[in-house]
Image (cartoon, rainbow, N blue to C red):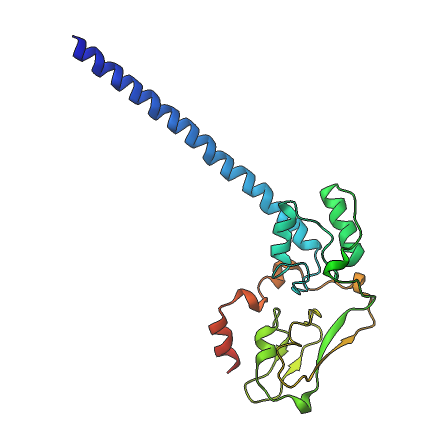
Length: 205
């Protein structure tokens, strides 16, 4: 009799434990389904306000990673290409006070700049093509390269890799706060840094 009671008590405890585990597991699963959706929506909203230069001046490899960091609480004033207009828009979205641009990450320019390749000096090394995060440079190995001005975001990431220093950053007449690159959803399909480096190397050879 005592053995039967002990067995019943053990089974009751086991069933109760399993039931609690299922309940708590369901709650955790529900939370994981609900909260990331809200976070992802906020990231998209933030990313849509960023200038999509993919320049890295904010300390992140692109605008989307910076949007994720902002959604997690990072400062909103680290984007020189977007300038104060972008900071104000982010502050309005997040319902916070708009700070001034953090000078440690750069200064706001009154003009957007684009890359210009002095084509007669280009040796066709493809290093600038590989460095461009938005595929705004066209060319092939050992052949002249050129910049698609309408695609260039002015990040200047192509300048340093050039072994013959034939790339200049030249200003455009449009103020930077009036400039908006392609929509974030479209640009996400174009950003070369999201692609396999080996694939990119094969494409330019």
